[in-house]
Length: 157
Image 1 (cartoon, rainbow, N blue to C red):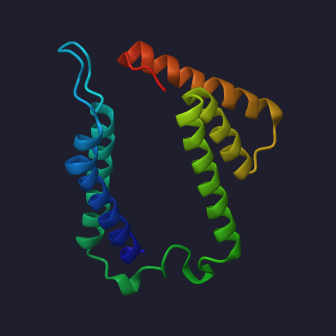
Image 2 (image 1 turned 180 degrees about the vertical axis):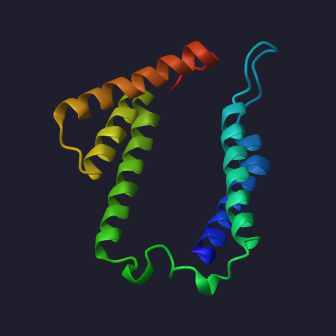
């Protein structure tokens, strides 16, 4: 587990640093006035939190006094089975769901895209209750849309 934590923390730290130093500054517009929040604030805040947690994850394992050989074998001990057919199918389904959500967000709206992505996610996780699907698909994107507008003055696409 020590090696995977160090690797995951390092990759996440690099991605967050790249986001903070290049991606967010070059892909967001400046604030429209002195009284409005910059569109880069929330992505920068999220990337900063990811960077801090990633550094803590990696540093905690690097500075750990327990040698790697005394820890249980990676993630699940002797039960580790690797990345097989089931995981590949699940990964493909998540990729398809993400692509559909992005296309819907660009061409339709955030609320519709969020609803479709949430239905896909809850179905992929095994939830089959119709009421849970309906409330999640309709309520969460609508509430986020309203919160973004009323709290931050940002209109979702």
